[in-house]
Length: 132
Ligand SMILES: [Zn+2]
Image 1 (spheres, protein in one colour):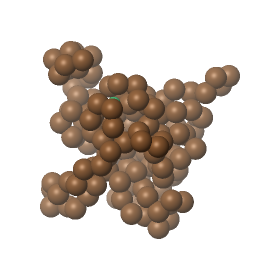
Image 2 (tube, protein in one colour):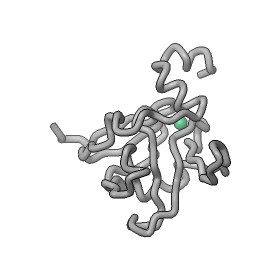
Image 3 (cartoon, helix red, strand yellow):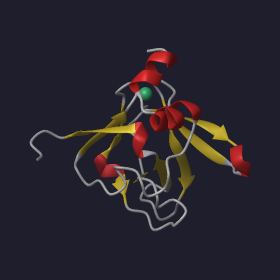
Image 4 (cartoon, protein in one colour):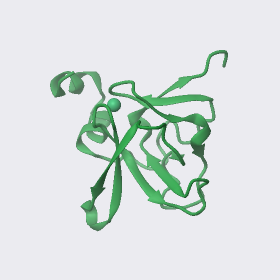
């Protein structure tokens, strides 16, 4: 799918976050408090990214406005050094299509020591079979 097709398929907010490395407004994401079991996939290419078991509620105020995960599926994401906005961060990208997903931080309160702070608009939850 080329960029023009993507622009038609996605909402302006989705396109901005996924393809122009934007950030959704904190506390607005549809998956922020999602508790359904399943697999979070890439909205653009369907690549399975994060298991629902890795999702957690964060108490860190600067990160609490977006869905938090402590682990990605093996090989699902890639990282890029991001020094935009005067911050030193690791950007998280879909390993398959290169879409922007969010950032990952060191976080001693997370089970794995890693805190993936992701945008809900980049994700599509595929619920496990047999759930309401
Ligand atoms: Zn993707």
